[in-house]
Every structure is written in C-alpha cells, then in structure tokens.
Length: 270
Image (cartoon, rainbow, N blue to C red; front, side, top):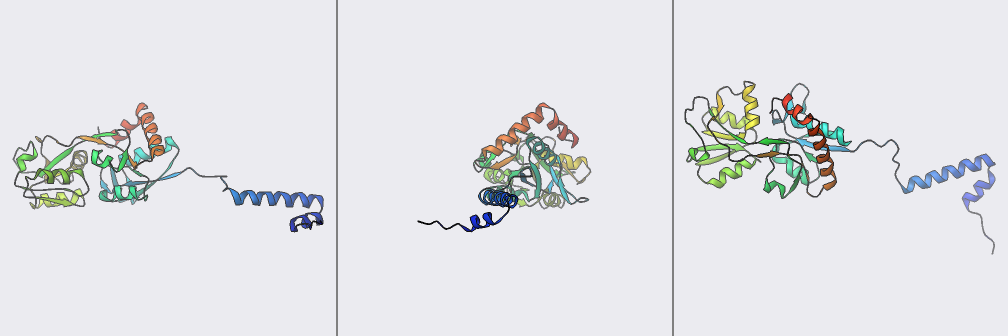
C-alpha cells in the first residue's frame, strides 16, 4: 500500500537542510506551547488584601496619597516580602471583609479584626499578632464612674456594625437600645451630640485618635474594665492551609527579628 506524504513532510522535503531544521524547531515549539503555558518571566503571586479606611492606626485612608496605610498594612507588606508575595491592598468597609474573603474577592484580611470563635467558624486565622480589647467612650464632662457594662443598664449605647461588640451588647439585654454605626467617627459624633450615652469600640484605635487630638470633647472611661479581650490576626479563606502556613512562617520569623514590634511601635502601639 502506497503511503502519501503529509503536508508537513512535503514542506520539509522542499526546503534546504537549514530551512528544514528551522521548520522542525518552530513546529516543536508550537506544539509545546499549545500543551503547557509558558512560565518564563512569571511574576510573584499577588495577594489581594482587604483593609479598612477607618481603623487608624491599624488601617486607614491617607487622604494625601488616597491609599490605605497603617500598622497592619505595613505588617502584611513585610510578611509578603518575606514570603515571596506581591501585596495589593483593597479598600473595604469592616462589615464587608469576611464576605469578600469567602467569595474570593480578596485573599487575606489584614485589619483590626479580633479573632473570635464565631469568626473562626467561617475563616482561618493566623497566629496572634496584637493584643486587643474594647474601650468605653463617653462625653468628656461625664462624671459617672463606669466599671462594667452593667453600669449602663437602661441607657442607649452604640457600636460599629460588623464588630463583635454589637452582638455582645445585644445579648446582654440590659440597654434601652443598641445602635449600630458604619464608622467609629459616626458613633463619636452621636456621643458628642448626646444622642447616645456611650459607645463601645476598639480601645487601641480610640486611644490613638484621642492622642492625636481628635474628638477632644470625648474621653475613654478610665475605670472601665474590658470584657472582650482577645488578639488580632490575619484571616484567610477557610481551608486555605498553604497560604496560612506561609503567613504564619513569615510572622514567626519577623517576630523573632523584632520587626513586628518595631512596626507597631512606629505607629504608637505597644
């Protein structure tokens, strides 16, 4: 039975030896590229990191650069550099962070987010990063000595939406009303106007803002004893064990080198 040369064979026979070699090489490259993607010059993997615009000094919007900055931004960038990731910061409201993580819009949460058992059911947290507790904010001329939340029974009190404080305050069932606010600034404004008696918020964030002479008409209740003490950590999508291991390994190295403490000290956090 006579075999008919293929088109490629006929082209090869018609070419000079040099052209024959070039054609074979180009065909081989073409076949290889159709089977596997090229990795030549591939960049480091980019992590999209969710951070909030109102958690100063942990994360906040720098109005001069229009970029999110702060201690947790500096830390995730240091971790990214150590672990070999490029970091892209994405602005997000606090209440949107976990939904964005679960739907894959972001890869990591790096914000003033407290690690809680409830949140740990839907996300995976890194090692502890920074100790955290709530503070009680009242008007500056309020002379009442508040030591526990029971001292505010029957009053109207507020907290930021999406935080663990809202759920805790409502669970106590002792307040006339628990109001929720999109930002701490909104809550502070209502305390100033007397619309609510007090507000619960992140003590390190509130203390920092007061140290910068913001909200001079307000104060932290000095005698108040926190009830919700915990730790801040990075968060990744549930089950993303590889990324979590990378973050934890870098955190451990940076802590041993003193870089984590240095970052928080630079931002006035101890």
